[in-house]
Image (cartoon, rainbow, N blue to C red; front, side, top):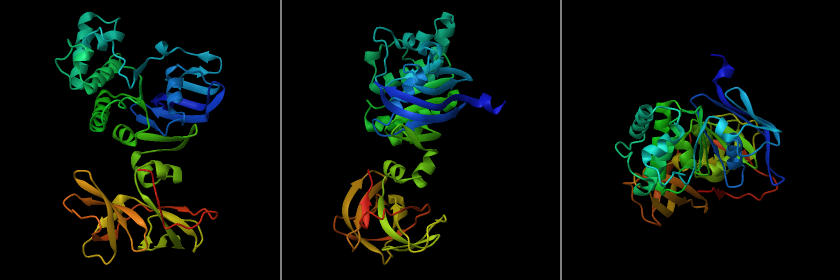
Amino acid sequence: MAASDDIVLELRRVDLDVQGNPVTRALSFRVRRGQLVCLLGPSGCGKTTTLRAIAGFHPVSAGEIELNGAVVSRPGHLVPPEKRGLGMVFQDHALFPHLTVHENICFGLRRMRATQRRQRSEELLELVNLPGMGERYPDELSGGQQQRVALARALAPRPSLVLLDEPFSSLDVDLRERLAAEVHEIFKAEGVTAVLVTHDQREAFAISDQVGIMRNGQIVQWDTPYNLYHEPVDRFVADFIGQGRFLRARLIDHETLETELGIIEGNRSYGWPAGTEVDLLLRPDDVQPDPQSSLQARVVKKAFTGAETLYTLELDSGTQILSLFPSHHDHAIGERVGIRIDAQHLVAFQCDVTEPARASRPLRN
């Protein structure tokens, strides 16, 4: 198979405008067959408009969108949504309330024989863990079950690409994360290629092979969830992904940093000269409990999450850092605990010389 045959979706320098206002500029990315990718970013970054443009609901102002080797969008040319061969899953399920589950799933299979439609519906109900529920109506199902039916309906005609627009935002947090993980398994089992849009990084990480972090209509970093967490390309990505605190540090050499926590050796080489002040990103998993350590910190906050407890710890200088302890390590507010730094992936950014030095700055949780 030629490399180009493996590309299901490609955006080439796409400009999108809404009511004359620019939303994306020169946006480009590719999705290969069988990949699950996500456009992740804050509200207003352009991710939903991009998904609508892929679906055919929004024209491009410049550039091209190509599906399976054919241009479906360019200025003056727009293939309608129903002719793009896509599956779509929306956040509000969009099920037909007067149709049974079977009838909803089979809605796009009218060209198939009745026995074939029934067989495909039953296969998909098994796949989405709803066996035997084909004769129920949507209002007899929970929110999570309705979303599973919506997924089954999108998969029924075996589309070349499935688009998901904030598909779990109406569900509670626990169900959202569980269903996201299930969707990953379902799509992999079906060999589905999919593009997800969300502002929730847990959803993105649970489903996706690759994630594009969007900001102001541009993709800042396109990478695996692992690399986005451990190797963010800039402060925006570092801030948006995960939790952590920035700690002021000084570069001793290309791989060694001096901090108030001591000397920390990096796993990469920085090109800045010795003596450069940097902000070092410490994630909660970089700060490990160590009862025997001479490095002590005071517990100022704690959040029990089940298997782990997230502690906010204050150093003698007043600097605050985050740490994950096993949940059986139960420490009271005000208690001093021993810690050690085990930062396998150091991330540092050169300090802004116009900004006054601060020992620690919180990241968005």
